[in-house]
Length: 381
Image (cartoon, rainbow, N blue to C red; front, side, top):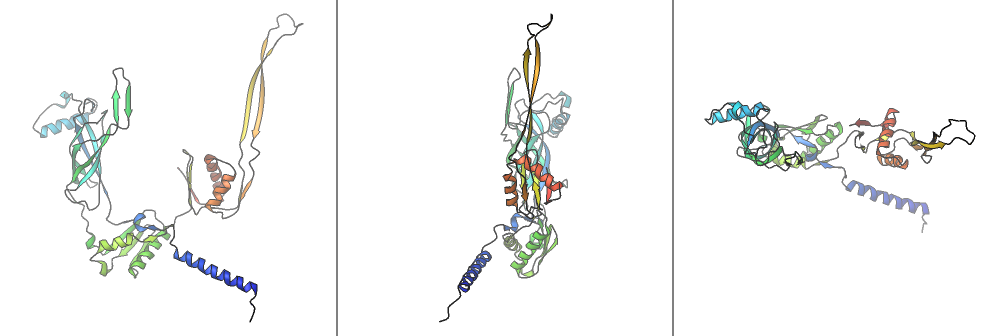
């Protein structure tokens, strides 16, 4: 019987181990993979902003001062004239109403009769909108057309209170509120998915690599080259004839596909709060870093000088200042060398080894960038 060399057994064992490891890596899904639904939007499936100007009535003396807010007085006069009451705007003295701006978001494919939430914000000098009722307010889109009509009782979370002496307490924002289901959709935004033979998919964070991966993933699902990346933000999808009758089902399958998005190496710094955010692709060239704190402390110690026993006549006691200067330099801070191509974890560990805080790290990163050793885009907020 032929005897195996010991190194041959070790080689066979390592080969089997390597094969199992590779199989496990291939079988395991990428942890960074996300759904297309979470990184892209489909053409036509979008919200629309609505805005309107209205009046809130029923306030307990906390509304606009009419002689200081002429638009409120004019709105009151115009509204009453439409109701058959003619008054002079200068004669109105009420403080129970306020002019407000009304905003809402019209969801995609909202049909006539659908109710949506609205937000109401004071436009004049009203102090509190609690207890107010919004009168009928047309809600217009960017094209000037009316898409919804709002009306209802306001819900205000903030409040304010004022005493006779002028002392006041305010919590939250009493001049802004919401009305749940406060607007009724009157006009629909025309868009029919069933009539499309081509659809654009827009990435929320444009990137060439991500766009190509999304197109490849869609083509893998359909089994044909129906999708292509037109630019870093747009993937053009030609609807296959077999899916023309069920475009909703096709988009449902597409948005559940998982891809691994790519991103440029970027460091975002907020100097106000001392926040630092670094992407995983941040790399640096070989660089040596030293950081230390130098503290100079000057202490003034007054001393009293008394005249001697044989001092000439007229000598007086004098106050003499004595200054002590201490220089404290942190000698524990050492020069740290970060090798080329270190990862994000190694970069953070290297900076933490210096014992520096977030604001010192910001200064170090800016200095590394100025030296040309930071291979990433740096954005200072």
